[in-house]
Length: 334
Image 1 (cartoon, rainbow, N blue to C red):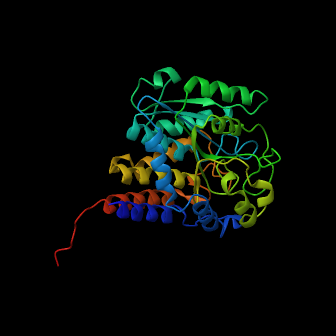
Image 2: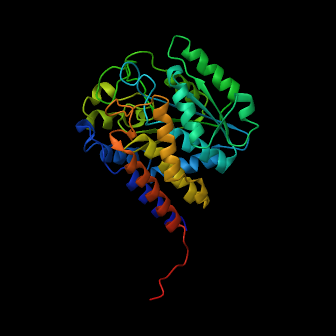
Image 3: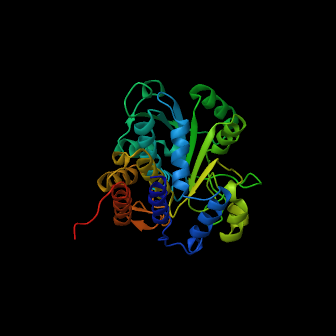
């Protein structure tokens, strides 16, 4: 069975790293970053490594702090359609598989977007206190980008005592403390300084997972030299912030979905997977809350320049890979 599990998860990793973006600075990059991440983590599948860490660390009634947030004024003032769906699906699956409570963090300007997406993904919005009592409950809280960010990070870690922290499509700073977009431009406006949370968590030996697609997201500090080598403008945008496990994907939502698929295979629980209809509902809710496509800046049903149909198809394929991979002993009768 271990060999079959690894085979299923290797196919999950292959799916989520299929290149399908419209930006020329992303072409030919993700496969190299995935390979570098595998080398840095003693081999893949990366989604299985993340799923195993979740099952090891997340406990019933415990808390998982989860963050996302890319974009900003003037192009994406309410955030992107990449990040919130992935965080919502992964948070719901972690709760369903382990009983841990997901607490979601993002820029104050993105809270409405993330909350709407989480609700569409099957999580119930509650206060942080009631989220621990309600099945599938969550809370969406603001993450500071100001001088109080280190203090807020310390307060969140003390308040929630997380067993795990997770980042999906959350931009981190480079070695000079400057965060950049995927095209190599310095971020504009106020950016939530999630790195304060991850730096302090590392000091406290709290386990962490990072999911990203361009090398500027939290987690890619684990392979910063590879980002600088393979990504255009990599010297500027490569983040310094590592995580214990890094999952590199064609788009960050896919990386989160891949972890859920690996979690479903690991626990033999295919009901952890979300459906294409839920995927559509989340993207529609995200756009209705003024989320935008990260490649075009438009409020359309797309993620990173790929249309809704592509993401529905990816969700379908992940489901088939997991469910068919779990079939035992089948032989065709002819």
